[in-house]
Image 1 (cartoon, one colour):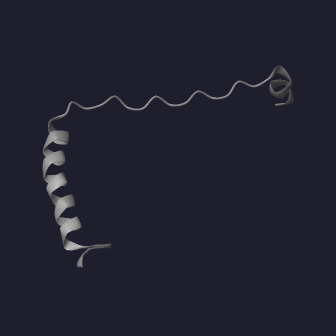
Image 2: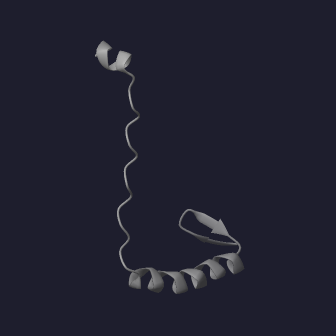
Image 3: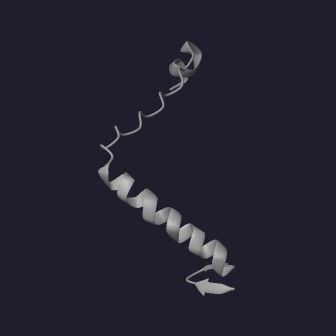
Length: 53
């Protein structure tokens, strides 16, 4: 087993992960920036709950 950092995995599994990262990282760097996530709306309060405030 190869041990690198906190991940311990068989060497062939580690090598496959490295090869995948070598393909994915350059593609991600070329991708246009994505829009920031839209925040979830606040739940609507009932009139009684609003009056209690």
